[in-house]
Image (cartoon, rainbow, N blue to C red; front, side, top):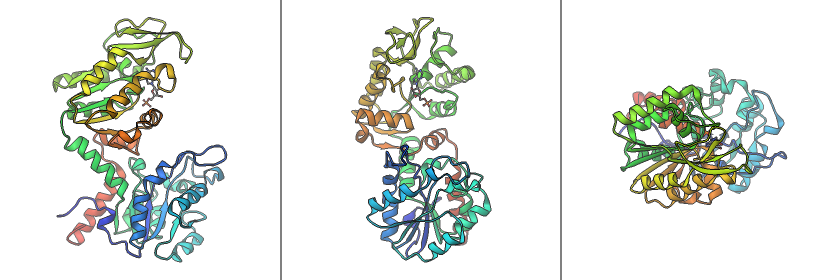
Length: 408
Ligand code: AMP
């Protein structure tokens, strides 16, 4: 059967110089120590697979935002060191991505060797998806694997342009996992499918909400977003944060949910505070009673009960965004109560987004989720039903090969 995308295990990379685009954009402290190496660990299966195949592994990633300049504090050196320790083998850091010196180091590699290119974003051409830069990256390799799901929604030279210059192109094992879970949740879900969306900015998620209205059986809206929805239907929201550029869009989401007879849940009570401060005076009020000079910073206890009941019979749950200002203890109860309800459900649970991830770590419930996506923006764009440029590039590559031979 012909596939529309090739994966690393469909491609013969034995003994080949294999450039793997990874996401090693790890957090660093002010002494350039890696404070969380989850992103490095997430691609170890792909790197180990390539090493087991005897490939010459060339890794490429960006780190931070050097804006096309050589910023020493954003060197990949700490990543090379950590990766070397995790793989228990030497990882050679190249001086840059495309110089003659780098090329000659790469050409000397032996099967089983690992090299890490210096920060892709030291080169301004990377974010411009520059063809020539893509060609020069491709010149280093005989095969290309993309395992950087978190950047798949951006068209950059290392994930789009490069694919035009190599025949053997495919996705890595992390990307495969992301796409498989996404498909289980959105393309062919076990129902009821319940989507929970929180956070602050409705404008970033209108497309996602509209798309969820088509796919989900129930949509739960919490966090600051819910308050913008209340404002859109003319409730008093006091001094709460609202995104007032999207009030009409909120009404379209409500209309779409109604027209599809999909159940839409909004909070019925809130924890309100007299100021945006951990030490603020707080009280619980219903959604009709937010006082004029107060702000709603968390969902209330009746809402937690309502939302918990709404997910009780779910077979699939998708969750993005906190239920309140969970960074402050006083307003974290709603988010942590939802974490606990989701963690203890029998549904397939798929979670995405930086804040949601932080909340799961803080609650210690990380391991109880079926899958936590490594992509924030990419996860949302997939939910929205958009084509991700890096995935489209891999599809185009596969199509090209299918036209030449019988299978990708
Ligand atoms: P977003 O980037 O849109 O997912 O928003 C995440 C942020 O929303 C977190 O930093 C939360 O503190 C914030 N947030 C959640 N609920 C509220 C709220 N009711 N008022 C203000 N900020 C909120």
